Length: 96
Image (cartoon, rainbow, N blue to C red; front, side, top):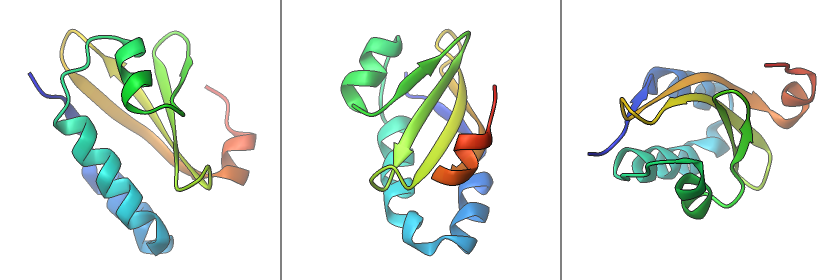
C-alpha cells in the first residue's frame, strides 16, 4: 500500500516563494506516494539524506540540502504529515 502525504498544499505554498524547489519537491512527493516503505531503514534506502529525529520525525534534505521537509510518520497507517518546509537557515533554528 502506497503512502499518503498530508498536505501537498504545504509544499506548493513553499514553492511559490522558492520556485527552484518545485521540481525536487515534486520528485520527493512522487517517490514517497508511490513507495511501500515499512520502516525508517527502507525510507533511508529510498532517500539517502533522510534523518530520523525521534520519536517519529523524518527530515528530508531537498535540492542539495538547501531545503528541508520535516515530516511525522505513521508506518502502520501509511501516512506522512508534512509539519514544515524550511530553508537550511530556518532549519538551523527549528526544534522538534
